[in-house]
Length: 68
Image (cartoon, rainbow, N blue to C red; front, side, top):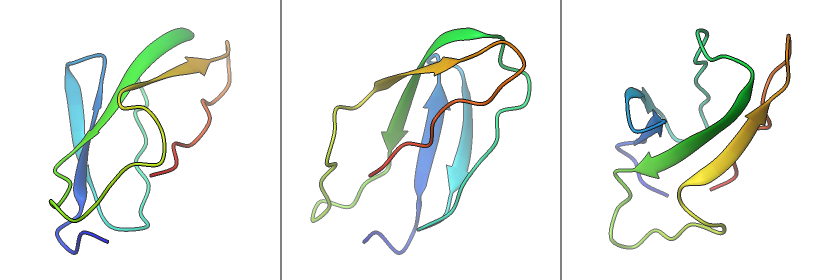
């Protein structure tokens, strides 16, 4: 676990800080596929899936949360 938290970036543009076990919302995303990357990991941390990931946002809906 990284006590400083992480940074989430969407489509290589908008980014937000996220705390450990936290969540963030990107409200202005349109429907469709978006690349979501997690950065700022401590050297002793690893991700359990690929980074970045593609998240599909349905029309009028929300994308799926990422696991670290």
